[in-house]
View (cartoon, rainbow, N blue to C red):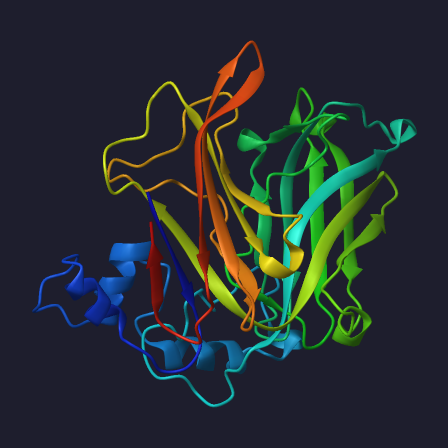
Length: 329
């Protein structure tokens, strides 16, 4: 298996040079958009980075902002070319989980919950929504008292803590009919300034609670000083994933090695792999300190009578770059 991560930053070898060297694009291709599309899909990088940055700046006035729109700043914004001087490592918010910590039955909520709606962050980079959870009523997630964690699918780009970060929550529980749906939480959680989270010997995981009329939600996150954004891709480059084995992909930083983010977990089912051998990740973007390390773990396991046992596992460790693409197997 091969996993690759992209870290935004200063000039370095171009993505096209590295792709040509590995035979992944022909010599006559010289468009950063083609390279980005090959690796991460068309949404990974804009065809015009200046336009994306200018669009975000033009709408920084929240009074005129369409609050229901999502961020226009994609991941890997400065990976494929020159980087403006103002794009520097900063305080990145690493979101580990969001869970429903408590519900109020007197408000009509009962386990299990069939959760739909959204949770989004808004930061100084672009005050539009950066979705970390988003489900429609027809695609709700069943959450139990024993496993109350929401299946996060974001952020779509790094969350940067310059000014306090705002978490917007709009969650409901699906009933038998739409008229019987119940509100779980409609509220906003504001973080502290970065100074409230950094300055310790090592980064710490903080938990914050949002107490709504109907429930209490718990958010777990860390703030990584002088961090850069990494976009993860994991691909099977030799053979195929065995159909009888499940799998899990976990990312973690060296500074918070005891806790990771799981961008892919098949549970008791088959590993989600595309026809081209790319493992389908629910989360692709993480933060890592420029002076730290990013570890990507891949595990293949079998499940017999609800007992999990590892069949194979391996890890790769990346040293963050200010720009370009890193590969390892």
